[in-house]
Image (cartoon, rainbow, N blue to C red; front, side, top):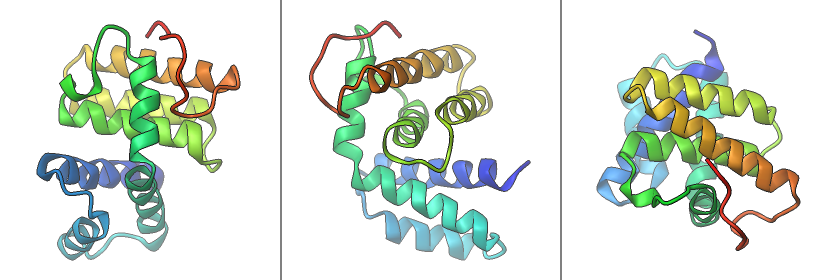
Length: 150
């Protein structure tokens, strides 16, 4: 497994903890994660820090964007794991340039296959495709607009 995949998994674990405890102090959770995983490579650490901090910092606009891409569903009704996989995927698609969009979506789908039930990967793919479509149409993250089919 590549370092980027491991870093995404670490970021999901960190964001999952923040979400469950409704405390978005990512650095405190990161510190605990690093203490429990002292052999994490520096490059891996740098990437999961960028993802976890980026999602936490932009959580409101990422969640608004995901809400636009979800059809007849609310982000809050999704499981913690699905929600945070979507947050990382949407953050990578919308607000960073170190991962190509299609790679970010593929990685999110693979993580859903590994950590969620079998229907979740299709949901993750559909929602993130909707996020990519909104981005391609020039809509700003979180901007109101029609709901896209997921």
